[in-house]
Length: 318
View 1 (cartoon, helix red, strand yellow):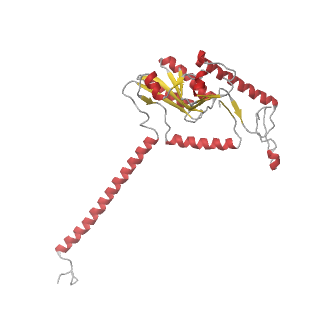
View 2: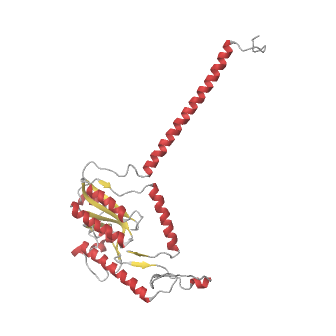
């Protein structure tokens, strides 16, 4: 009978076996911790790489080894803090023109319009870049190129469209709501205090004054005349000035070509291949990162909420 069975101390081989088991358990725990640290580090690297990509710190744009056609998109409403803002579109255009391999620039437009100021800034920048770099710009319209969108397109050397594209709306508008009498019906008293006779200009809860209406119409007329001047300068003798051409009406496809608002039918690939003679297309459109996307959506949600309440008014080329 062994010493363990009789209650004595363990033998040498039993002690060695116990030590081996304990050592194996410790080694296994150490390995488990090491693997745990490894996988945590791997997860951290993966998340960090996603953050880099999401913040737009690398992988921003495609590159081409040789001569190419540069493309910049103008999509959506033209306004500050949108993808179609002047800052965003100009950044893409500037990069496109600076690239020595760029043979010509396509401005891909799909916009219903927006801010006359933002559209005017982009129009002026296109004309400046063309003069500085000696490269041509071709506007290629997709679904719609209206109002502020057309304000920008007028700076292009030629405008290409689809047979179903909608073009035009050369006009300016200012809209809002009038809630005169609504608060009284609800039993609410509004207290508007202002220094200056017209500080409450076009206030939605106050009666519309004739003097303020006339002033607003005069401002709209001035901006409309600026818009007309830009279109005339850009289109030149190609433009057929009918009584309706600057009335804010829209036209489709071939009719817009007949009126001189556009030049011919054609898409991006056609213009790159047949007009610019450089089939490779490189997209220079700046892309927003995750942080910018969240900020824009938050800001857009705030603006939409105010607009639904009728608390904001704006002048738009739409």
